[in-house]
Length: 388
Image 1: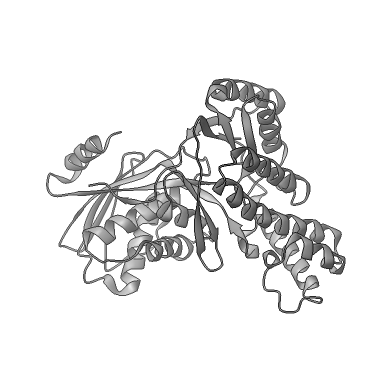
Image 2: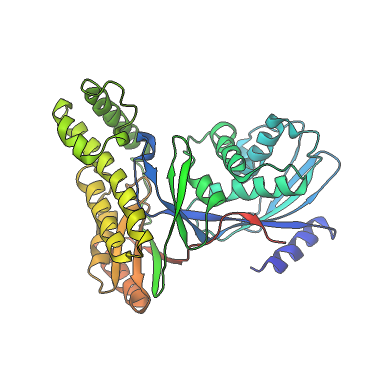
């Protein structure tokens, strides 16, 4: 759907008048998994698909929300914003507006009509909720001339999901959506939001995201289990390094000197992944700064193997996609992305090999698992912003 078509839909719902349009992308994490809560770096990039929003200010304190993707329409008053389960998807933008109210902007936000359209593949784990939140933050900031910088908008979007919607997400998704840069990934330390960009020159290559389409029933319990194992490993290491704040604050070489202090062998495996994965992110930036996509692809492969063997969060479906991807001549690198136990892989594939990759990996995956994978060809896009 074009922005002109979206505007026409807006006018059919709300009437014709001056309107503004914004876009916020989805994201994929290229490397750096399960280390954000251990003080490490993530390495996401913004994608070319995401959430569009068309909006117009009102003067009656009323908030009206509609979506091209969902039939549900929701209305609320800015003076009484509360989470309601029946509001479904609309709780995300309402939560963002609530953050503006909490920040002291209630008097300036006089009401708004909003129409959303998203083209992030549903259920793909590419952060449709974060792009919805960031798009809302950007359009509200613009419509009411609030002059809030993007990093603060990103924080507000995350807070909305944490406190209004009640989902305990980290900040990577919103940060990548808001602060993404075309043809770059962002190396982000979630603990303090220190970041830097690294160029990804995809000449003759594509990013392919493959969705396992497996329901992830174990995710919450295993996530909590892994965090507890990392905390136990850190506590053991602190007997040798008392001031150590995060596992990712030590190098692989330093880890080799203290690993004997970790009393649980399973916790030691988890910690080894964390420390080495963080180093892989650092190495990835160095390789990309030297335009060495091939070496970056090897780091992706090492990342998946570590997540499979040391952190044990891949599972049969993700491993099948990973293994079948590497059989394709022209696949530069592949790995699981996200929390694991289902979800997606991300691969870098030469242009000429893309049709074969999708056909052969898809066929082999179905033969191995009985499931049908979905494939998305993605480009690295810019971060959120106003379109007109």
